[in-house]
Image 1 (tube, rainbow, N blue to C red):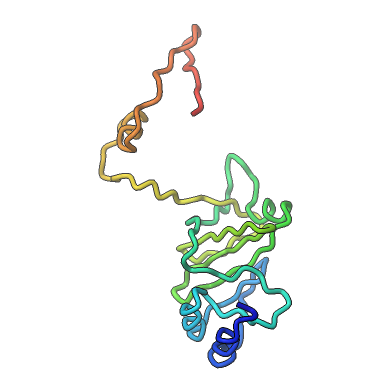
Image 2: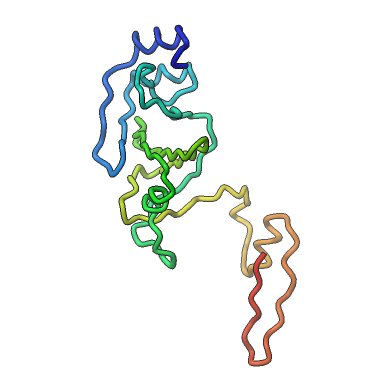
Amino acid sequence: MRREAAYRAAWAAQAGPVRFEAAPFPLRIQTRADLAAADWGLGAWENPDNERWRTPFLPGMPVLVAEPDPDPWPDPTTLLGLLGEAGAKLEGLRLLNGRFVLKAELGDAVLQILVPSGRVFGPADGIVAKLGLGLPLEAPVGRIADLWRVAGRPPPPRMRPFRDGRIARWCR
């Protein structure tokens, strides 16, 4: 798109000044002018002359829906620390509706995380993912085997106690 003449003309005619919010990574604030970028499949205008051009915010791309966890337990690994150690480049976009999108790029891989509450990940935050399993949530789940039935899978094999009465653990 950097070389696309029509995009360059649309960007020049419609894109407004870019504003940023204070965060541990560049956090851009979406503007009303950015809404016109949706015609190009973008969540916000990207300056085609910017040397730092990366993968733009793509609204049609699958996202992980998650929330920051200020007290990660039992694993105290922080999200920003983990991504930073891997060498990922981070950017954020504050949407007009208040939600927040964190984009992490590592090589050719791109991950977008949508945070419905709009809370920005801080340096000490973990992450709590919201999994869209498509389960009928009104189904009663009294035992773990019931959850397997609701998900349309056979329950895992029964576990036998050890001789001292402990239950055998299993992983699937």
